[in-house]
Length: 210
Image (tube, rainbow, N blue to C red; front, top):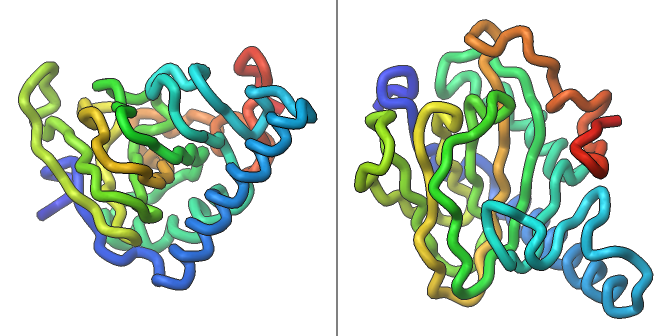
């Protein structure tokens, strides 16, 4: 399978089991800390780093989500040369978005903005939950189903291919999305880091970036 021809590819075990375990434990512990801060009214349900409840428009009532987490953004940077070698495209790193899904969640069928021209969804553990995409580039087609194990990543052209998830029947599933654009492609003049000054900086209220 060729990424340039097929517009998607699965890379098995892109991260070691130890790193996956660390990332999984980190993000689930971060949610516990966040839940406690919410319960004690120390922070808002919407902060620079965290989203909770019905504030994630693609997945209503998601269990927990985080944009531009520092650790995940560092993994985004660390994986770039490995991904470039696999797909033979020079990349610019933009941002990560991590979710903990719960029973009943679904990912709305969509294509992504230019910052997500080349995207990856990395399984960080939990119950099995396939992602669907339409490799034809058409709209509202049946699509194909792809299952990932912990440590596997699906890379796809997020700004070209519709992708989605059907309602989740499991208890929880942790996924982190890694977003790049082609350094020499259609969006080559787009600023890196999703228009942030540094990786790990949060998205600000009103979509304003630091």
